[in-house]
Length: 160
Image (cartoon, rainbow, N blue to C red; front, top):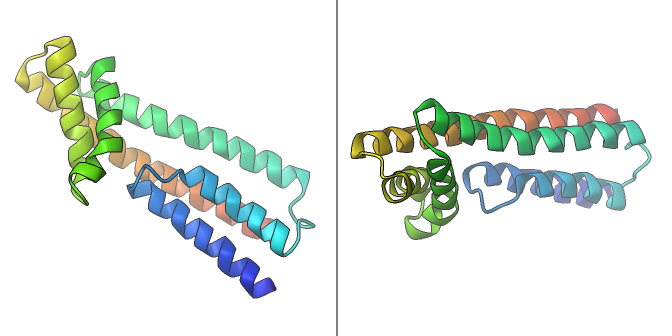
């Protein structure tokens, strides 16, 4: 039973990391599901209340990091709130419209369209906002990946 528990836990962690580059997958849900799968299949004994408090704080940090990275990326390149929302919509739709390349093209195109249609920015500013959205997305992927790695390291620490 221990092997099954570990296989399920690791599989859920892998799905969580896939969510870094495919944002329709809720990474944080799969990280938490990995912890719960371990607990239900193997044991909750090592996963103390301190473990859960620490992990919940990291969940909050994950959500904040995602939002802030996108906002900073767009704002740093002179974009508006419309550019940020366009980037977010593009990030969700892009991978379905343009498989593989849509993960970067979606936020880029979404930010440009939003800037042009809503704020009526010039093409040069809209393009800069599109670049900012891609920079924000890539920064978010790295930051979230590091946070998720720390969450798993804490999980393993508590299992010692």
